Image 1 (cartoon, one colour):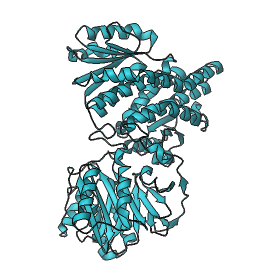
Image 2: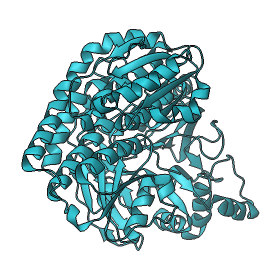
Image 3: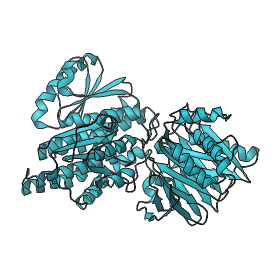
Image 4: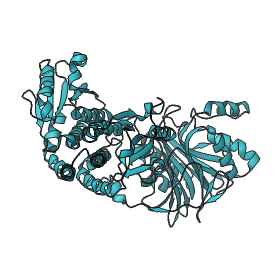
Length: 599
């Protein structure tokens, strides 16, 4: 959930590291720091808050004391897990002797035991974090090993949990060593030096040539090159990969926020994703008698939408499980089960664990991810890639829409294999998918209307989203989006459940967003709208027009099963403009991280 960058090369490491950390801000953080090796010692600056505070401190150091600089350095943006956001708890961390510096993403589950053991030997800790045990343990072992490479292997063997680690040592001023387990780490190669990073945007200005580090692999970086080893110290060969998207795709491009840019990119993303999906290898659905979709957050909501589509078209039982629950529930699955995993990053910790549980039980796994070299992409049996490109805003928009499109396409493919739809029906459904990009583009004609209405909604304390059938499924995503970026309490309910308790929360001037795209259920949701309107609620209607609605955003016609791809765009724009009118930090909402790589 944090950001890592390290550099060794011919240029000053500090501006490169700070610049790289800026490209990782979307991952979520509450403190930041940098450490460089300078003339046989570590120069370290760490600050609570945004990167701007760190930059000011670096500038002050340059003006009032010896400037912090060097050709070997590591940097980090921390999202607090163990210990509050503070200068002391920020990374990088050093050992007591200040011989070894470390940055860490992940969680060390046995840190209490390790910390107690080290404290019994007189080692004093400076922070409340789990991460500090790593440099302290490294220095303890280094006294005996006197070799950083051997020390890193020994430290890793003692750690329980997840980690991506970068090590520097004052005795090896020409080396960075990296190792990972269940947390992403890439190695970048450029003409002026080499990098470690938790994600590609951190290094893309300097190189598009990267290696993806696998679990329990070590990378030894020098100015001259990179060598890879396993934990048995055996050299391993890795293939370099070329990143095909450009730095410009990770820039705002004139938009005020990345989120708005990414919403507006959706017609292109849908078109590219559909082309990519059609070219990916087939999966024989006839081998399976049930489908389980598991994911977290917005990806889970995509799965809830997909359940309606799969069951309608394929007539196959479908379950949707939160990955954080699936991994612990001892699910009833076997070799006749297909488990579909949905994750934008391909590094979501709970979804990785769910995948491994499913595989251990004999199930086949199919992943829908956006990142080619990710853990889930490598370990699943089948992988379908979206073509969303880099998504910088923490609250997902275009990646969610791309996931929906892949799920639709899979459902059509599976239904055809199972002979549940005719060739003519398959052709018609695919034509509807191909028309979605233009229909999404047509929705943008309502942007100003949505913006004006959203401006009147910033005073609400609670906003409710209702829908029936597949409209209820997409209401879950609309509610989540609003919560994430506007900090307004919101909930999504199936329209028919209002009278079973929820309607007690409706009072004068409550806002209810009613999604109505299913013509066969229009009368039913109209009844629900009337129930809340009679109790003083204001109504925003998306889709069908309701007489009691204060505003209506119509949608282009499409197949009922694919309407979420249209209604979600309105919900995204509504949430965005509510947050914008509140003056909030939309791309980096509080307490959230883009890639959730810890439990």
